[in-house]
Every structure is written in structure tokens, then in C-alpha cells.
Amino acid sequence: MDFTTARNRMVDSQLVSRGIKDAKVLLAMRKVPRHRFVEEALISQAHGDHPLPIGEKQTISQPYIVALMTEALELRGVERVLEIGTGSGYQTAILAELAEKVYSIERMYPLSVKARRLLDELGYLNVVLKVGDGTLGWKEEAPFDAVMVTAGSPEVPQPLVDQLAVGGRLVIPVGDRYSQSLVRVARTKEGIKKSDLGGCRFVNLVGQHGWQELE
Figure 1 (cartoon, rainbow, N blue to C red):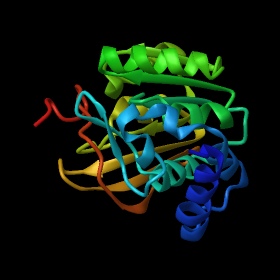
Figure 2: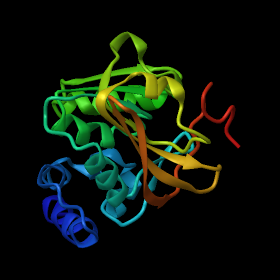
Figure 3: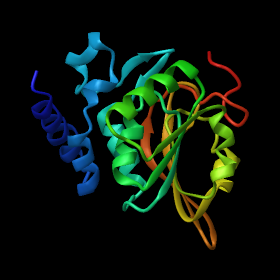
């Protein structure tokens, strides 16, 4: 299978056609080998317009959602980014292409280990991973210029807002267990500004400031 052609087709038909304009985001999506982050049996579906299971009841997000959330962070290459939910490591790799350093937290040890191995193999040395409750953020490394949460939460976890630098952006799906709205939070000198980027559906964000348990 020609994966380069498949990625370019994915970007043109799913991202550009839906209004993703950030040239750096589009370039990253063309470059990162998405097929490496899915199960071998699902490689033929890696570039489809839908999420895919990655084990542990988790998913790799639909390409368009990855691009939309990444674009909303407005990364320019100098940022320190906090990602909540490493998962397969695909979104982590996209962020690593666009930011100076990425700190990513995963609740499930097996996923974190697998992602670390693959990210190292692909040369993403500007990524730091740890296992823990992502809703608490990473206080020791705060503040962050951008925060991305790749799981749905009943509300925006306050620790993540607190760890966002002035001028920083946070993107998170907020709603019930079955459907959410993608919320962009901007922290300014005057306070917090929120905007709605549209509907989405993610797995549940489990933790002290999220859902208490998986259903």
C-alpha cells in the first residue's frame, strides 16, 4: 500500500475540503505515518474518515478531529504543550511536529509504553510521557502554552485551566458520556474566554476532575 498517497488523499479529501487551513497542521498530517499507530489488522482503514480502536477500550481519533483540535491551538513551533490522553501516540506525534516540547499523560500503562516505543522509533525526542491522572495536569512542568484533552469530560478540569499560561489555549470535548462539544478555552490577562468548535464524540475522561469511572 502506498501510505504517502493515502495520507495526501486523506488530507485533501477530509481536511482541506472541510476548512482546515493551517499550512503547518496540514503538512504534519501529510508527514506523520498514521498507519503505524493503528493495529496491524486495521492498517487498510488507517486513513478512513472515522476513529479506530487501539485497545484498552480507547480509540485513535478521526483525522479531521485531530486536525481541528490541533489547528485550534494555533501552534507556531515555540510552545510547551500538555496533552491529556496519549492513547496511540498519533496526536502526540502531530503536536511534536508543531511545538517545541510535548508533555503527554496517559492513564493506562500499556498504551503509554507502546506509544513511547513507537515515538522513539520515529524520532520524536521532544516528547515526555508519564502515566497518571490527566485531569490533575502536570503541575511540576506548568505553565503550558497549550493544552489538548483527547477525551470527553463533564466540565473543563480546573487544574488544566490553572496550568495554562496567559495567552495560552486549551481544547477539550465537554458534555455527557455519549456526546460532547469541542470547547476552546483562551486565557487572557482579562480572564477566560470560551468558544464552541462544534459537536464531537470521545471516550470518557476518567479522573478526579473528570468522570469517576468508565461505563
